[in-house]
Structures are given as structure tokens and as C-alpha cells.
Length: 319
Image (tube, rainbow, N blue to C red):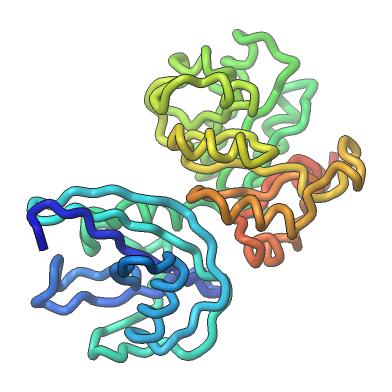
């Protein structure tokens, strides 16, 4: 192989109902040998990523891939090799996984994954797997007491991320509410994301942030908004999804999927259109709009990283 030639690798993630992901131990004499990896292999010339995934999983694990969705592209340069990891989430397969090439395999709890046990290029994949399956978006609150109660109820329901959406507040009041919510969320082990205009992002450097679709489309560069551990955006069509991908958003919300008080049946995407759009970007996509708690399984089957919403959490909090 010529020095520094880019190697295109298809990577498949299979997560079971116990939130465990399938991993394999690399042979000692291979590149990055002795480390664990997420299964996959090189994409051959003229081969699609899906075809490469299916071929590699059949050859290495005895598993046939039936349905899979792109999640992220990762470029990484090792001293002796450059790789492009094309990471896909496998949602349907057949067969029982075994190490057909003598490699050790196991189902590893996502919460127990440690980056130092994997090649460096795999570190963003671990972050990807740790994204929450449900995200609560706050309704409009009249007081901080209502906000605190909402956080308490989300914590009791094991929600791991809340987006603080309070469009009625002034910038100063929003900052105050966010600081209060940050304390409560930290105590509960919940990630808090600020729903703010990109222009105010420098105020929230170091915090997860969320942008509206209009702000997303006006952003000029991937670095717009400053440094944040996690950036998300609202999307409604392919153009917005592609812009989010180009800007390196960590994930997006795609809506409206189902009927809500705001959107009638004629205006919603439905699951088939949601899936068709999600397939066209390498980006974690959350289903938003008319979601219910029991929609998680169907959402994942159609390529969603998870579900998000206001209504289903408002009802849980008994407002």
C-alpha cells in the first residue's frame, strides 16, 4: 500500500436490547493488533458501504446484514496509515455472531466501553454509542419551580439529556434559568443543552448547544458558534440535514414525524419518509414530533438514533 493512502473502512454497530454492542479483538499481528474494535472491513473498489458491511460480517462473524443506516464518517491519520471509517448502525441481521477467523468476540456494555482499549480512530464511535436514546425538550414554563419539577421527573424516568427551550425569556433571564437548571441536572446526572441563537454561542462555550433550522442554514462555517462538547440542530428536509452534516453537527432532530397539535397529517413525514431522509446523511438523527415513549423501537428500526419531544415528557411530569 502506498504511504499515506486513504483506506475506506465500513464499520458496523450492533446494539442488543441490553444496551450491549458487539466488539471483536484484533489479531496481534494486524494493524492496531491486540485492541478491541467494532467489526467491519475495507470497502473494495466499486463496492457500496452496505455491501462491504454485509460481506465483512458474513465472512468474519457469520452474520448477514439486512438493514443498516449511516451514522458518521471519521477521518483519522495514524503514523503509518490514514483511514476513513464509515460508521453504520445495523438494525436488522440474521445469523448468530461467532469469530469465524479465530478472533475473540463479545457483547460489551456501552457504559463500560473504554477508549484506551480501542484504536484511536474509534474514540468518536464510543461517543456516538453513548448518545441518549431519549431527549426531553422543555415546554414553556412560568417559573423556575416548574422547571425544577420537570428535571426531577425526567431524572426519575432515567432521561439522560434535556434541551432547555424557553423562547419567551430574555437573554439574561435565560442565562439565569440555564445556570439553575445546570446545577439540578448535574446533581441528577443529566446533560443539559442550551437552545440558543448561534450569535450567543460564545456565552455557552463548554456547554452543549442546540440551533434552530434557520440559524443552521445561515451558519457560514463548521466552527460557527465556538467550541462546544456537543452541537445539535433542528431539521425538516434534506437540505437542512446536509447542511448539518457539512457543519459537523453531533446530531440532529428531524421533524415532524407524526401528527401533533401543531402539524396535521398532511404535513408530517411519517416513518417511511423519515427513513429515506435519514439514510442520505452520515449523522445521528432523532425523531421529533408526535413521539410517544413506546415509539423508540420503531424509531430505531427506521434509522433513528432515538426519540425526542416535549409532549411525552410533559405528560410524564403530570403537567
